[in-house]
Length: 440
View 1: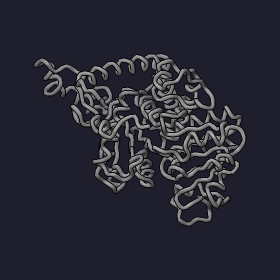
View 2: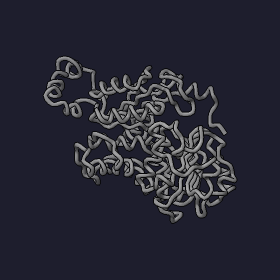
View 3: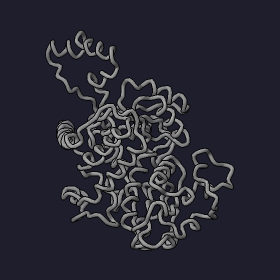
View 4: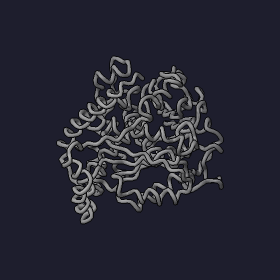
């Protein structure tokens, strides 16, 4: 059941101040002295410091808390190739989530550009502005090339959330599902429906968890990806197996895990029934309608560990569980990259948080009496304010341990600082939003 009407959604984006974001000064500018320090001549002092050492840009500008959300609108979730203009509301929304959940500031950069090399050139030139780059809604396979090239040539974190966000959240769910079912990653047989950016990234992370590539059956729109096919790009070819399956239903027989990043209705009850004994894992992430409805999967296999992209069922696979807190941790240690160890640390932190009883305010927000670790709670809820304390701290720790951090933090003090920071940020945001007096 829809929580809003079309008009209510349009009003949300258009009433009062247009859009969803605003830039607000954080230093006073009400006297002549303030004015002369904010701009000329006082600003020259900060400029000289940075000219002598560009790392001082993190001290004298907002760069260390600023992320660029960059998109060309060629693969907007659920909408496809709608272009940079139509994709802008999504990128503004991303900025809202960054700020609300992790106090990270965002400029959304919407590029009316399709040439991947041109995008790389533009984003590289933006490096003096940002502490990190979040690539968003850029179609595959160009997104792989763009991210890899930018990671090579930029000295700040570059992270394509469409790939890695879903991977991190489903990996967290899989870690807990394996523990509950008593299965091991190296023995797992996985079926993947979809072979786009998110599917490839998820599967890459599962491999890093120990899943054998030969035990992964990936399907694209033309069928099973196997070594007999000659139409595969380099990214799909990594998952071409010697074994060949005639259909998705054939591959699902005895499978331990199904990952769906494709289309609604491709999985049937019979296919779920045919999966392996003892808590088969199903992450059906097509939005808004999953590959198989939650209710149907549970009717077919009551013991299944089921997650979808929807908030109205247990175990929501929601990227907001990852990207704000990953960037928060990366920015706070001055990381030069977001590496595989940091991604796995984020997944492990999410898995660990799900093992903690959910606070009363989270249960109330989702209309339940309690949320406890088990089949129906292997992924934390997005409104859990402890996410920054778990995920950001874990990411910062992994960055320091793997040598990509420019700063070393006292993690216990950092955890306390995050708790206070997010609370203070929430109060500021509430004050600004309430000042507009909008009833939406």
